[in-house]
Length: 346
Ligand code: MG
Image 1 (cartoon, rainbow, N blue to C red):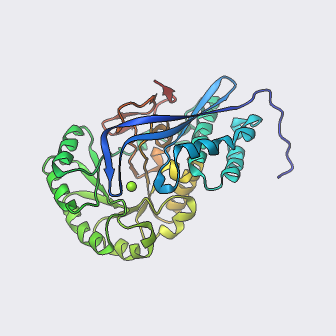
Image 2 (cartoon, rainbow, N blue to C red; image 1 turned 120 degrees about the vertical axis):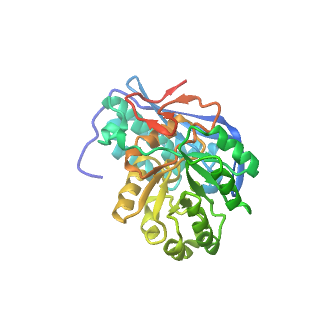
Image 3 (cartoon, helix red, strand yellow; image 1 turned 180 degrees about the horizontal axis):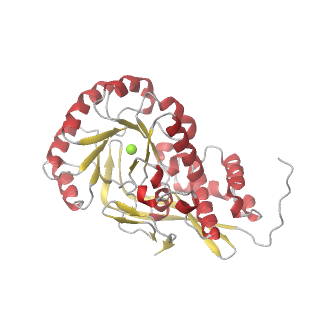
């Protein structure tokens, strides 16, 4: 395409991949599943003595696993060999064509390429994008589903976090929030992970609001999007789409059905599609949240670079694990510190 010719380069960009196992501090339970160990795919993209780090935390809910993502990344080897990382938009356009809807691999590659380009330019991504780190909202810390007593215990361990996201979708949802509220004045957000009905959501929203809950994430299964119109109108609390908000193409139909969208790099395929989702959401008057899966500091730091664009952050995947192989953006009691340093292996 186009009338331009590729410049000849003397460097060769190299792509290395690995599957890494990370372990949760506590078994992590949401309405549909439980996890102790998570397998992520990491990418090192090397060019001219610099290395960019990327990651995918594939989820079976979105039809992906680590082996599949790693195999998909091999499809990009030819594409990177003579490409110049500073023309990352050209490269990502081609990578998206090669990968189609294999968005885990696209995310790992996209985040590694942005990281490499930013190292080449000598400025972290938030600087490249002209973002003000002081506008980064606080991140929440997530409490997974457990017995009420265990959830209270987990909350006590998380005293330093001013915002807590509580996983719900159990028969004792209101009791859980009532018991947790006795322990703290922290802001609560709740995530039903598709575990409620429309009527239940509207009813619970008023009680949850009275208990100091800020918003509800994805109450209904994604197939029930039409029922969200009434929920959105009648809920006492804002509703934020997660399982319904995967790629940029999803965003227009969420207006009027949700108040905001939760963007995750591994769902949409990395930084570039995430930025498209932010612009679409803002155009449509939707709020913006960045979320994560259970993942290392590579992917959390990549999402944190975009933090100043968000209303809400839920970037705690790296602090929920006990053996993060990487160090990146620090989480200081919920405050993500965007600095001049890049991610590194510990
Ligand atoms: Mg969620």
